[in-house]
Length: 464
Image 1 (tube, rainbow, N blue to C red):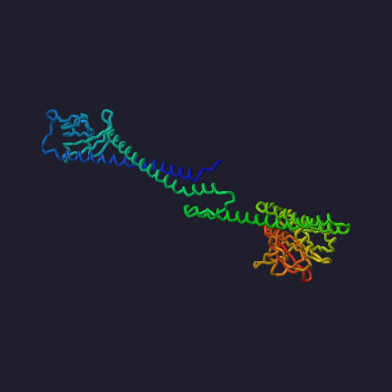
Image 2 (image 1 turned 60 degrees about the horizontal axis):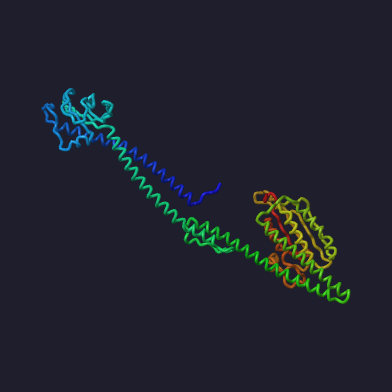
């Protein structure tokens, strides 16, 4: 289901709110007029009846002797439906207005307000008598007149409230539209940007509520920019690293072609083979680095036995170590279970062992260890889960203390060493360790010399 825009949602909410306000206003107005109009007419009937009674002379018998006076404008007699009657001794009708029925408006002649039905017409009547009870004045008005007047006033009030709410709705629509104009302008500016334009967005013209969103988006743009810049540096460094072995390959091939003796040709081909092997290793590390970067956002971790992985990879290097006159010693404990990406752990192990072999002289030793760290005890007496470690130590020249952190940076090489490395292997190790939330520790190697890299993994229970 496609989500609605913020503008459409706000307009919908405002429209619904205005409609509810209109219904509530109409209901309130109708209830008010129904109650208040009846009270006003009752008061009016009471006032008129009392005034008429007070104008009748005391001690006089009011007997109608003929038709009443005629108005200059006969139409005025029908302009008002209010009528009254004057009764004497509740038997004789002395005076009544034109249009008033001949029968009493209130047959019981009780004082007060009441609703009666005479000849099928509903009347609202107020009756009042003098102190002796001889003269009774009854003033009435048709219910239809009261209802018509109430409906008219309700219609006027409804039209006025509708106009008012329409004006309010128009103003609110204008405010919403004006408030969202900076957002629309920002969206248009983003669409018109050139490819890879990661300039931070400005939030000065946007509502304050959107500033955190813009700040988060700018943070994301900054991360993307750093990532792209890192890839650019990597491509540049990789091209620079590949230029040297490729040039050497070309030079050694030319030397081999110009060689006049088999001995010179064999020497050139041997050097050519060494350069080709170094180029192959560099290409493999670059591919591993690209694969690691592509899978950094979607790691696929599973439980694995680090002991078995370490043993498998170390045995793959046995032949290579024997040819280089190095010895690999294994100190592997069983059941070192960790949560990891098996392919990435293979890359990490290969680079650690290959790096140790490269920096160890002929006749040297390399020790590959895997096991559990000794368990610690917390203050409450509970034992901390044992962590799994992987350690590769050698008896080579070692790494100066000041450079032990820098060697894990991409394309970094220790100055003064005769070994020609790519500077990628340990950066791969650091990247994989970071993805597995593992810590890297460095120290001296075998017998107080050489170099040692120790990687400590969190327990599988803590990561799962």
